Image 1 (tube, helix red, strand yellow):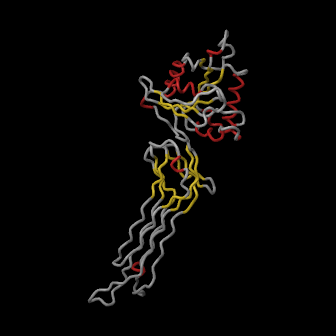
Image 2 (spheres, helix red, strand yellow):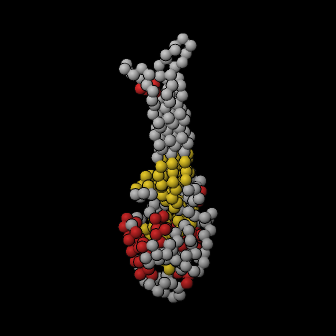
Image 3 (cartoon, one colour):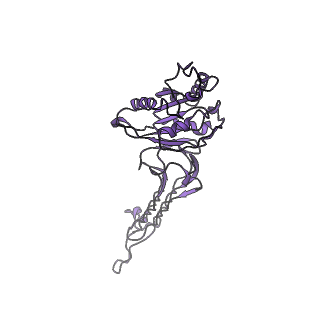
Length: 329
């Protein structure tokens, strides 16, 4: 399935129905009073979290989402029916912004969470509302109010417990495959991963937790180079950052420092999250495989599995026991 994490859509709520001008007309009451009913409220456009969704693909080709208008009132002081709401289903982790000023309207995380993104107009009042001692037969009513009409930008930020951060070809996809049932594409060329991949890790005595393999970061990612800006936001919700560094690089320590710099430039709060530093590809290093690895928490081979269990044990400790384990926004 194609991964879509940002769309812009026009949303229009329903107009309120109009109040009407009506008078009682009964056989023995030739001059009955006003009995015009109110118009019904226009329908809302509502965003609702659907936990079965993992992408904004369903919204990609929708240019305009509308709700139903309210019905007009009728005689006998009968209020018109309200217009039907339109439900726009989104995945967990969806943020919705007003596209005009980029103001955050809502951040939807929990399954079933809802937010009105365009409110329906209020129905107009019928002439029954305007009767008074000096105005026995009011000849006017109100129109319904227009529903909100706005352009919104919908952005998805993945909710994962662990985010894998590293340069292209550091071995993140191989690591994810080694610890979960996910099957990300693997190849010896940059940007094999062109979209985030999620894997679920099942651990004894712990709830399953999710790990996100994000497309490789390059220098300048925080300024929009490569795939950086598009995917850096997906690590903002993760509880742990796992930096995977290629041991076969000319300068693994410098690679790590550059990764820190890119994350700090994008969002300084990212480096306040718990983090693990893992050197990968020890199976490709001859002789002194652990030399110059003092900055790393673990040295592993995602390909052979060497050292991987120790990394998972460290993640378990950070996430804590099952009762406190939960992805956060």
